[in-house]
Length: 149
Image (cartoon, rainbow, N blue to C red):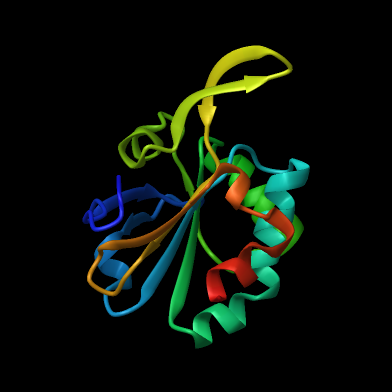
């Protein structure tokens, strides 16, 4: 997906099994962020940055939804442990990850694998992607501040 594209209507199911749709956020901007794994250092830092600045994000007109390939059960534990106030989509078959272009080849310790590419899409009130943060652009501990700028 690229800037100017319409995001898909059906985003997936959250940790409670509720279907999350783009139209649920009509009239608000949506921070749709993709992260590799619950309870890892960078992913926890990113989620906590969004949690700690959640009120400021909402005041600025944003809602937040996280997505990873972790299970709903893993998301429940991650949300409870870190008191995350926003839904987490359990994209275990990486359908949304692939659709959005956040799934691809990664290199870790010289080994190439397929996995989640840390990516954040800012989607406007009409469902159009207006900004994309990828990879090293994302400062996990300061991600909410990056979005609010």
